[in-house]
Amino acid sequence: MSSWFNFRLVFSFFGWMSQFFAGCLIFFPAGLIFGWMSQFSAGCLIFFPVGLIFGWMSQFSAGCLNFRLDVSFFSWMSHFSSSCLNFRLDVSFHVQLV
Image 1 (cartoon, one colour):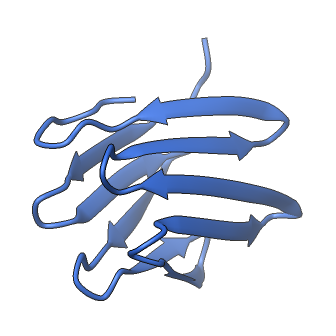
Image 2 (cartoon, rainbow, N blue to C red):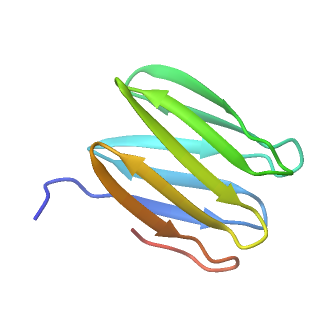
Image 3 (cartoon, rainbow, N blue to C red):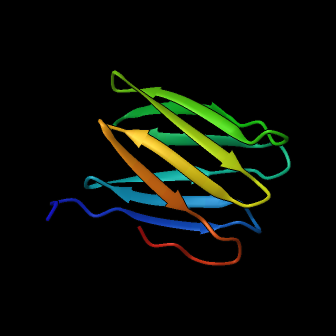
């Protein structure tokens, strides 16, 4: 069993996400209208521009490329990170604990 706890709370109506990962708090404020997301992680600020129409986001972090594909209508996300494939399904108006 892994020693870290990963908590993700997604509330699609207001478009915010909070994540607790690897002992540090990562907070994602995400604006639905303008489609922006900011992340504070490991002492550095990473800014993500998110396209609303196509709903895709790419991130290069910690020497590995993390590609996330967000389809806003069905609200699903796939995430490839750290040599393992993590598939996450986010359902609208529901809370997902990962």
